[in-house]
Image 1 (tube, chains in turn brown, yellow):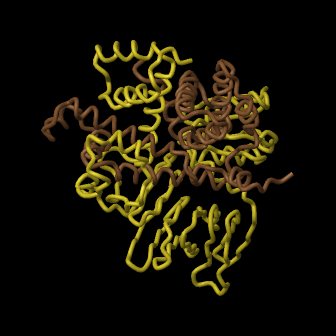
Image 2 (cartoon, one colour; image 1 turned 90 degrees about the horizontal axis):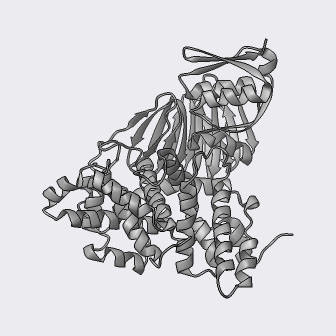
Image 3 (tube, one colour; image 1 turned 60 degrees about the horizontal axis):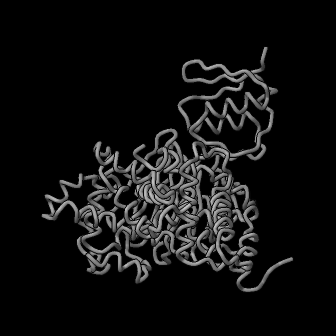
Length: 192
Length: 321
């Protein structure tokens, strides 16, 4: 197989899962999981998603993503030599079901699309030129190397760098990805 | 489970290179990639994440190469952390946008039409975005004073960039909907125009009518008729369901099977005909993919023990004999 998953799964992950990564990261971080472990958990969660053959049964991709991450995180914690009860508690409390995005969040997912375009625009100069030539204009690596008078390795590295910067920006657990419910909880205004 | 001491950062770096490689891969690369993927399980995850990011970028652009960039987007500050910038240190020329225009030489295209089943995103030069539903057509007219979108046909959802000095107005026949910084959809039908507000506030009125404009808030829907009738409703959940098309879905919340088939027929060349009136009156719940009338028909057949026949581009659903 030349790709991580079938095309329709990749597209589904891109449109339905990726926008929630910041939220899932934020949940894990709140459970005091170290940054490195969060990275591992996220990559493993994507690995599980890669084994899906159909996504029709997944009604709330966000809840599904959070569930997968939650189970991986719990497995990690159980394996750890020192079991962090607080983290376990916090993870067990992830409210997966009632955590469906509000309409506002679905919309911010839309706004996310516009944001992606802006992200490309804000890449460092050479990196952006190469990234755009690769992804927007669809030029082969060899051709870009010729046009810019750079080595193919440089092109390859810069293009990959551009992609990583964009991934970083998308997944940054900023305010944008916090639900109102979390904001309320953090502000200590909890109902019931 | 992590099978190696490799850091997730190293894996991410390698995955990004694999994701950006020219496809199809050469035979050697393919063998190498297969080898790489068979190592640590995180690697496949990292590659999926990288490829999914590229997929979402393609979607954001709503373009094949050379289509519909309306020039560079206005630059809003994007927060990249120091760690992010370290990755890019090789080309640490800062976040300059200079030279960008040369790369996004899009035509200024002010009309967009979608075919049946097609949904497109149109980023506009003012920073607003239109998402255009199946079989629809819009005409954009941007001036210094006003931003006017003529909904010639069909339905579109707008996410409007705030700009008090340049009102954003959607024209649908005689109906008018005006927003400042808001998200809303407008659907033009033969006998009425439907407005659904997902964010902020809009003003809607019938051009040439004697009724004063009405104000709609987030969660409000309104129906305007050429006779000047305006009805308003507050139903946030219904709006979310009605706008499921933006995810390529149809949300059925108890509509009759007949109405569901009509909805499907909006999106597909293959038409669904419910032959039996009793069956057409049955009710359904659930979200379905708009581009899969066959799958939908099968789901109905299973649920109601109905009979499905395919004749050319038509699917007939009726009672079993």
